[in-house]
Image 1 (cartoon, rainbow, N blue to C red):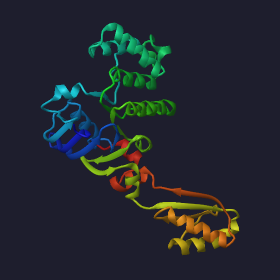
Image 2: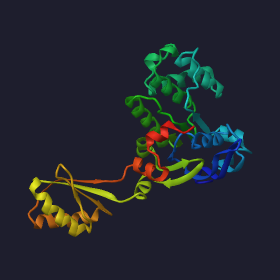
Image 3: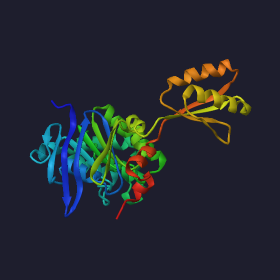
Image 4: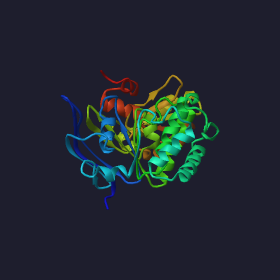
Length: 319
C-alpha cells in the first residue's frame, strides 16, 4: 500500500491558452492535514477539482491512494469527500431533510440516514435549527451544514476548499476543531485556504502555489526558517540597563541589537542556544531580565517573501 493519500506528478490543466495548473508535483502523506496556499487564480481549486475527478488533467498524473484519477475515477470517488467554496445544500429543504437526502444518495437506508443526520446536527451545533428553513440560516450555519453533508460517510480523504471563508471567528474556530477531529479519526485532509493563520494552526505540511506552480513546500516551521532567523526580544528590569545590555548582547550574539522606543532590545538569532550564554553574561554584569521572547517569522512574512504579495493582496486576486 502507498504511504501517500495523494501523489501528483507534473500535473497540467489548460483553459484555452491559460495554464491554470502548470507542472504541479505534490505528495500528501496519509493521515495528515495538508495545506495549499496561494492567491486567487493560482490554481489551487483547479488542482483539487482534478483530484476529485471533477476535471480531467491535460498532462501529468494524479493518484489518490494509488488509484489514477482518470483511469479509476469511480474508485477514487468512493474514497473522497469534497466541500467546495459554495454550499451544496438545497434551499427548499430543512437541515435534517438535506442530510437525509445526502445519506440516501450515499446508499444509506432512510432510518440510518435519519440517525446519521441527527448525529451530525448535534456535532455541528445545529440541532436547534434542524427543522428551520435554510433561508433563516446564517452564513456560518450554512457552511457547517455543508461540511456536515460531506461527512455523512467519513471519507478516507477530505478535500476542503476554503471552508472557513466568510465565517465569524467563533464558527471558524469550531470548524478548525472539526478538521482536527477528522484527521484524528484517520482521515487525510487536503485544505486550500487564503488564511495564513489557518494553515499555520492546522497543517502538518504546506504547499504554496502561484501561477499554477508549486513555489514552496514544507512544514510551517521549515517555510518560516527559509525566510530568515528568529528574533530575540528582551525587556530589562529597568530601562537604564538597556544600553549596557545591548553592548553585552552585541558581544555574545555577534550582531548589533536595536533598542525600541519602549526600551526593549531586539536582535536576530540563529538559534535559542545563544540565549543561555547571554543570560549568564547579564547575571555576571548584575543586569536583570524582566521578559524574554523569541519570535519566529510569521507565515505572512513567508508568503510575502516567496510570492511578492501579502495575504490581503492574495485574497483580492488578479484579473
